[in-house]
Amino acid sequence: MTFTLPSPRTPDPMSAPPLRWGVLGPGWIADQMVGALRANTRQEVVAVGSRDVCRAQAFAERHGIAGSHGSYEDLVSDPDVDIIYVASPHSGHREHALLALDAGKHVLIEKAFARNAAEARAIVERAHATNLFCMEAMWTRFLPGTDVIRQCLEQDLLGPVEVVFADHGQPLHPHGPQRLSDPDLAGGALLDLGIYPVSFASFALGGLTAVTAVGELAETGVDAQEAMIVTGKDGGTGVLHATMTARTETMASIVGRKGRLDIGERTQWLGAFYGPTVIRHQGRTDHEPAEWQPDVDTSDPHHVGLHYEACEAARCIEAGLTESPLLPLDETVAIMGILDGVRSQIGVRYPGED
Image (cartoon, rainbow, N blue to C red; front, side, top):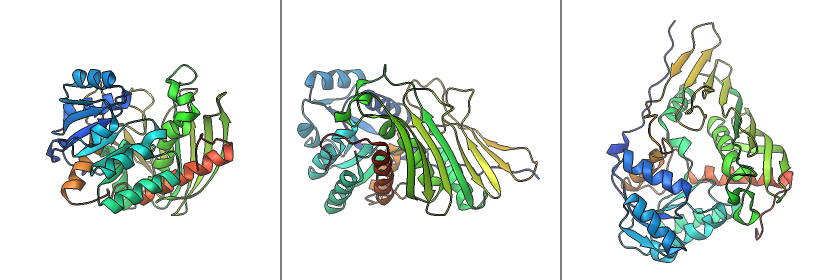
């Protein structure tokens, strides 16, 4: 019998209603996001803000953005901006999200959402109080391939999920971005890389309830790597790993009693499980594996797929929603709680944490 994986239900990014975006923090990920928005959507990036006005102006000039501001306060006060994309280091997310919300702006906040669960709750409470849209920019959750996986879970094609495997390793320390080594900026592997396998396990296991972790610290006191065992609300287990000292396969599997999904491809640059990549299904029988391939432009120099999260935000805001059903705020806070548990067990604490 021939088995076929479901087709993604993800709407065309060009169909998302255009919003006027302001970029808070003109770093690398913001550069990738703006490029993806320009290439694939009708979203309008109208302003950028930085504490360094020259940096803001250079970013604006590079991307053809009309407005540039030398302070975050000026950016969030810009009347031409509908929504703020918070792309500052993790250590600033709480402050910058609250600044935007208090100015009446919706927010899309880069992952990890904050340094810890307490900061995440503070952001969520303010978003609820202001009746504004708020979402974590965990781009994987909004990709077409993720909807293929979502339908497999919804249709019980795998049966009860027994275990999820996921890893994410990049050789970013000690010769990568300085912020990853800096405790003051909430550096380390966990919030930058480990968030991917943890969020993926939360998605596949219906939420997470507990974590056991071991890890290794860098010389600056941030985490260099961690291995994690998580428990899912639906009874399964996740076996997860993250490191910023070596390149790993960055693949994932969801193993159920009726079948298995393998997400990722070792032989192509679009192979990481958290991006647009191949998905293969293997059932308990000996049928040929069913396969789904993403329809992506491999010549696109930008982080392929970042724009889907912005389009989800735009659709939700047009519909009058204050959060996305694909990544509810309660789940974002719960994931931050799991990350807190990892850090507590391996001995990482950021300066100034409550």
